[in-house]
Image (cartoon, rainbow, N blue to C red; front, top):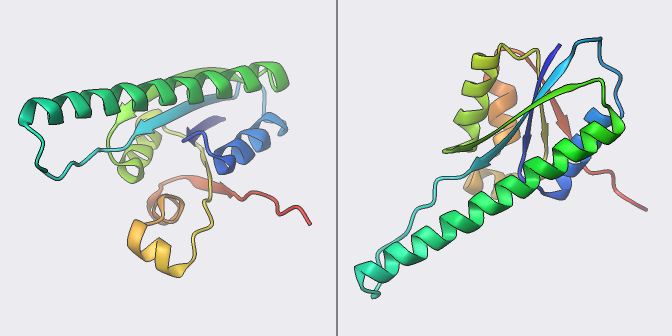
Length: 151
């Protein structure tokens, strides 16, 4: 079984990672851990162009560092809790909705696993829902994991 797990390091992604780590999959299953650096758009301001370039480069370095940390953490958790899974990783720059769908097709994934941020209707409309877009357009099964409410 080929799994694609997209992570952004949030509590929602951590819940999805725990779901993968605690699930028994058929032998020879694999998981591809994907971290996406969302396209960063800057509005020109009053800063000179050189400062904007420096700011953009710094933001990209920080985003790449965070993505690497997310991947490494997820890989460690899976190696510790579910060592039977073969793990591959990738960091890609782009729109999370389209990257997840494209990577799932390239991998011929059987299952995509993502965390749900649980936005309400207004935020979902304004920000867009990655999990909803993936579930609506994927050519394979999709598991959307929510953070369990502690009461």
